[in-house]
Image (tube, rainbow, N blue to C red; front, side, top):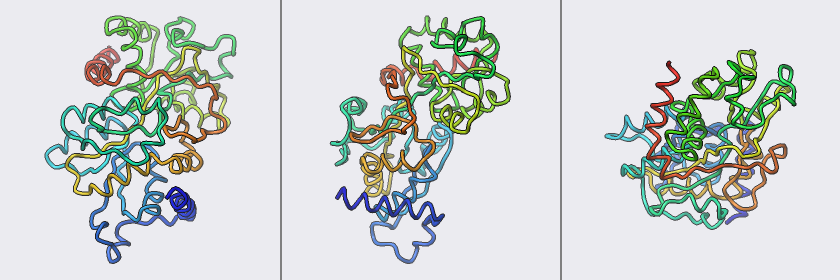
Amino acid sequence: MRTCLSVCLTLSLIVLQSGCISKSNSLENTLSPKQERVLTVYLNDFDEIIGPMFEEATNYPIKLVQGGGGEIMSRIEAEQGNPHWDVVWLDSIASVHNLGVNGLLYENYVPENTDSLKESFNAFIPEEHWYYPTGAHAAAVIVYNHDEVSAEEAPKSWSDFSNPAFKDGIGVADPAIAAPAFPFVNWFFQQNGMDEGKELMTGWFNNGLSVYPKNPNVAMALLSGEIKTAALQETNAYNLVNEGKPFTIVWPEEGAPAAVRVAAISKDTRNLEAAKAFINFLLDPATQQAIIDTSEDAYHEPSSEGVKTKENRQKDAKLLFADTEWSYQHEAEIKQWFADYSLK
């Protein structure tokens, strides 16, 4: 089965590179009984490759709806009376966990490829089997302009974000809009408690912290010189470096807060067979390796054993994982406090 899947994945990459992306309209007259409905997946990354790969490997037609983390969650909430999605795949485990708590997720499906998961990622699977982790990335690493800041002067720890030497020169993404931005700020609240977390973040704001809607906006602020350093999601950070821009990435010694990407099935799906196939497909080591090898944005730690990360990704990258239960319980409060304070 694995050999067959690997061959299919290779074929899918050829299809992708040639620009021949199959769509449901072209399949109308050739659908088998299992293909009567198109699988709809809400996601915030990898939309440029995962559709063709899945269709080629499984023969299920798929429709991808891409958006920011906050946009996807708002859409799901708005559709509660008439959900249009079958699967959600998002790097915001707390938000997806909240969907399960509120009875919106399919339960007790155990994919065959769960056996391939690393022990550290198995720990993220809830008792109800609402969702499965496909990887984790640094919600933010420190990035600085080395034409403006020397290596000796550059920030080396998250505590440096309150250092007057960087006043009015630091930027972050908005945790209410950008999916990875919430796991970033959330980790400091969980580790320090709500009161001390607010105190720490207040120190950052008092030091002139700038908040931008999404990580690409943070990257643009770095490029324009509006800020000199930032907490930037790791893919965005590596993309700047890969493009030859004058930036250096710092993985703080204490580690980088992690964003865990998970996939879950809607309890109201009318396309259960295809939805299950998609979850199992995402957990397959061959799929995870193909994503990393094919996508320029695949800077993350894969969840399955035997999958290699990007060659230039930090080898000893230390990710800091917050408690999922605590995170979902405090998500709304933290986002509201952050939004209120950033408007002051």
